Image 1 (cartoon, rainbow, N blue to C red):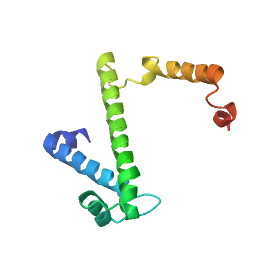
Image 2: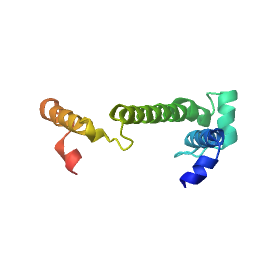
Image 3: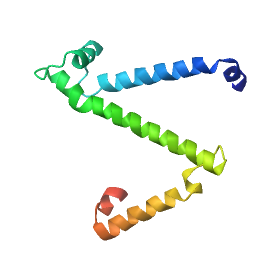
Image 4: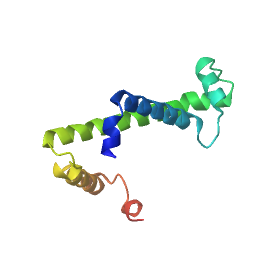
Length: 124
């Protein structure tokens, strides 16, 4: 597998990744509880009409959902790359830096002192 990746130019790999991103971004806008045709989604971006329900769905919820998912995914990728670079370990995990333990501490702290969530939600 590594021989195959070393023979393929990096620009081709980058173009494939960009195409996959565009396809997944478009599918996240089109797919949902209310199926919307791709032509309607394009029309919602080019000729927005608030009297059409599909346009309102795309403008209010689906586009923001797709953008937020993209930003969160990019943030996680950057944080993972930074963690690997700082520890100089290609297999770096969050527990190396104590991130899991810190997150668990603040969950227990919040539940104990602020009662943000009830234990039955966590335990089932």
